[in-house]
Image (tube, rainbow, N blue to C red):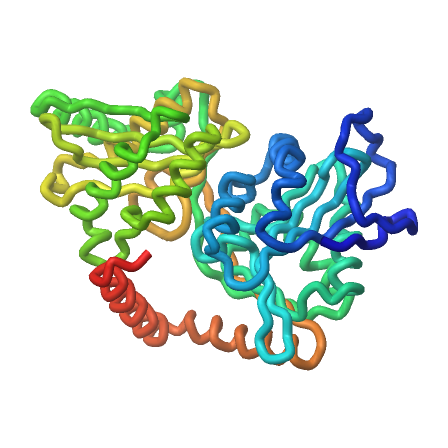
Length: 403
């Protein structure tokens, strides 16, 4: 761990987090860089407090999510945290994994390739921290290249940070990756459905729901907090193994690491499991996150032994949305990618970008090469070839039992 200059010109090697009054917003913000796995223990409670105040933050910036990647060694390079303190309060946190490539230091947000939306965790009352963090990154040469595949157009703090970095000599480029569909929710599910679906669509959906519950012994199980057990997670992993995801080589939930991650998120109060059983057999599941009164859909699958006409996946998703409306959830995000069922439930979308920024000769060269590859990936034949290679690699890993 090493200290860095604060915005009032002083130096800090350690941060006093013991008590004290809540600082005023115009007080000095002190920045700190800490490295390594063991460093998180020193600011764990402050991290949780910051996340509770960062009302627009996604669950993928929470301590239970990121700390699991660090503790389980699922980072490429050295874990590094840029912390912004105002008195005893943590007001900004940028969690990175940094590694050396040739002569350049390359940084990525922790949990890249697993998190949905990643970036800077910021208390909205301390926007000034963004400029200070950019100054720190540039002056201390924290990294030469920054890469993220998970930058949401809704993530204003990270966009602001990248803008500040461009003012300090970083060349920044981004490439569109996926649309992500979302919707504002109503207090009444019927009101929400009436606002977002046509009369014919509502009629068909309710008819399928009624038929499903009339023709089979259908039960909906909802597990939260400590009720989400290792056994429950193994059940949803088994459904995934019977789904179209398995056929595509994309089944993942049986991985021990993801089992630990989802268990930890649930026990922290952020993750929940919904299960549909038919005649006592597990048929479909949803693993979702709820933070800041927002519903984030995560993983889902249904067993292929149930025909598409039964619509088990769609009906289970409807139960989740209905429950959210009835329990004061403000909005829902359905996640990456286009699909008809996502468009059905959504009223708008935000965009996710792959972004790369570099400074210096080596940094800019690596960033330009990365950008060229990202642009090529947008070409249909190149993207198809890449997808086939990736799917084949996944199948090989699963057959080998790799995590």
